[in-house]
Image (cartoon, rainbow, N blue to C red; front, side):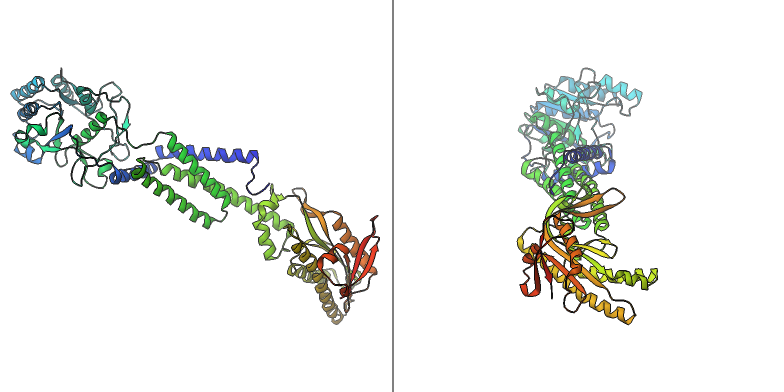
Length: 598
């Protein structure tokens, strides 16, 4: 299986991981307060910067009971009912289409004043809508009774604002409560012939046309008598308190400034209902799809990037892309795309897959270390690790057919040495010999695969396959070069032996090139990297046949090279003796053999 190949089981696992990360991320943003707050804060910031800025509306106005108005009233709380009655009468004279009184009349004042307000509401030619309070609102029993009596026969809607339970910010509106009561803006919409929605919705906030200018005209109540009728005629006019620390609420538009008066929020909702607008919130399938895509990207990153530092940098880049893209999506496409859920899915799925990748890599390294011990050169080890997706399958080397040069070596005269040394010193002597021979193989780019007594099995061209003839020729040349270097090393070793009064040793080497099958053999307790094929058998038989050959000049080392390896290496006839085809033990067909002379 190649790097990108997936078994059905692996593909299913990745799909389930992506779906689980998507579901968990979407749920976490809803139920985990810090995550919900972070998403809401980013949404509010985008709305405050990019909400539409149309001209001031011509169908809605607010008459504000501001600080100056309240200071001039005979009664500030409850608000002077005679003043409110006169204000309604004046607005009705201008030709407004409806009046919304965003003032809770929940306590009696002077009977004549209360009666005057009730009469002004009843006698107005334009519909006048009052406000009530939902059942859960804190009101005394007597106050609620008075409110219900006062509003008897008067259209009214509840003025309670839907505030986020975590930060108190108003982001949504419920046109109709669970008990069927309509909201204040919904009743006003119905009063002018509109059809309000019945299900909760996200408020589509509007900014004013210029900084400091509200989206609807606002006139102080004390100036209502002096306003030209044309300024109010044909509008829905809301009367409400616009004063410091009275009925103010946090909205996305003012998360970084003063809270907004409740009557201005009601005006925003009313404008949205009259327009039939929807907030720039995408349908539910869009966040789900974006989150799923982010999870898939995280999985891909975890599979491709196995280095935590590089993974972290790439992850930071993808996170920046998500947040920057979502920020630009609102002004460019009018969409308030989610960021927190895709970010969580990206990081969560990516981290899980990275952990699995690192665990597999650790297991792969352990497999390679167990198979090849310390006998890979740094260059070969690095190449092997880079090609691990090809080399390893299921945690062990995948079987592969490759072209390689195989070398077998064996010591001649080791019996005499073993009889001259005690066991501990014999092992140290063998360690020194094996270390020298192994170093020579590694220097020439070969791999020591196995020790059989004092014999060595090495190969050139494994475990990374050679894909071109030049590389295969280089392997054969390096194997013969290693044989020459071993001859020099054995000559030096015998000089040491002589100084220690130990018998000299000789070395037999068999080398051949060709196609073979390589892979791991064994069970869980013991696994070896094995070379299977006629080439390995020929190399072993050549090593045995070398005992009858002449040594390399100046060293007790005999090297038998198969015809394929000799021709491939580019060695000249002057470097060896052609022995023709020879029968080898255990083989029916003879083999072309060369004796390395120098």
